[in-house]
Image 1 (tube, rainbow, N blue to C red):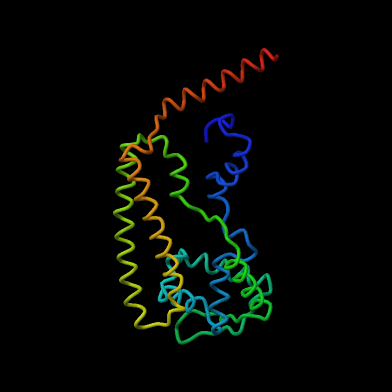
Image 2 (tube, rainbow, N blue to C red):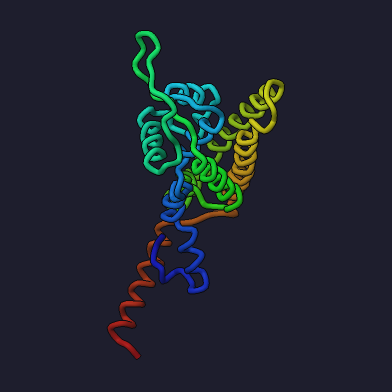
Length: 236
């Protein structure tokens, strides 16, 4: 984040792999199928349907957590799948005065692509975009007292989310099979893990175990640069 002169050679590779640039730019969208294409294929694996049906089912099944439900994104995904030969047109028709609608179906290649992509996503750990992690990488610019307050506030909000999701899962489990709730279980586990870490870091900051002085760090960086410059000007 500052001068690479402050990072040891042994730690340079770890720094590169865990930098906020990589965190923000690595995600599942780098795969052949994006999350929208997966959603469309999954729906068509269930039954042929037109885009309005897809949009309605995504909303009813609360996929808002993983998809931004914009009609344009859905149609773009359908277009890409059509051009790739993964889905096809089953029928085009009109009901009464409603606009003409095209019903799509999944093709054998689409079934294979869906299964293969899901296998890879489930089996392969990847660092996904995290605004929080990127923010934490610049935490040094907040003074410790301020940072401690922000961690305390985040812990309060996370705790409320955990309570709300726990109650929602308990209620939903009486109506649907567990397989339909595993994504929410995963989200709950991640929230609990984050809450535990945020509370611990906040405790260390408030207790004085984790402290820093950004101005002192700046002075250290300048000193390292000045020393490096002198060595270049006066090589031994």
